[in-house]
Amino acid sequence: MSTTGSSSRGESSVARTSTIARRLLAGAILLGTLLAGAVFSKGPASASSTPVVYAAQNDGWQHEYTRPGTYIFGNGGAPFFTTLRWKSWGSGSAWGTGKLWTQKPGCSVSAKCSYTSRWTGVYLSTVRTHNGVRYYARMAVEFFVSGKAHWVTGWFATHGGTVPYWGFPAVFPYL
Image (cartoon, rainbow, N blue to C red; front, side):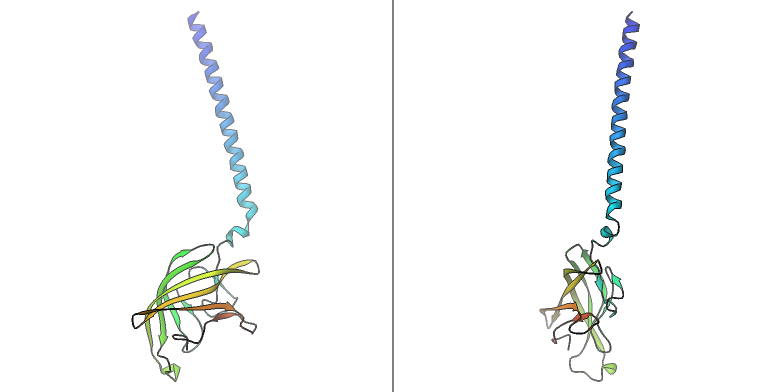
């Protein structure tokens, strides 16, 4: 009798454990389905949630760049960045450091002027949207001249024309 009693208690315990396991498994499957649906419903929007930069190669709206290693602002004599290493690249701002290459102010003919480099910090912010793509529209550049820190801020815009570019005030090193 005691064998039958313990066997029936063991079977009900197994049945209860099996029911709990099935419910947990069903819940996990439901949760997985809901999470997968949430991920797929976002589609391209999730890919564009982190902003890009335009004109890293002086190419207007043509290409989207994420964490570019170089940045070319113009032709002959224009400053440019190399060896950029991005410390952060987020939904509202990005920060990186690298080298700023400039020609000596007042040097002409530009093709014959040499470039010198210095450390620079690049801070991107002010997120805007173009054709559904979020991009950084403001760039603040930190650099040192004679041991003194300077900040120059530029904007990616059309500046009165039709092709957008990075516009900075006419101060060193952008003369």
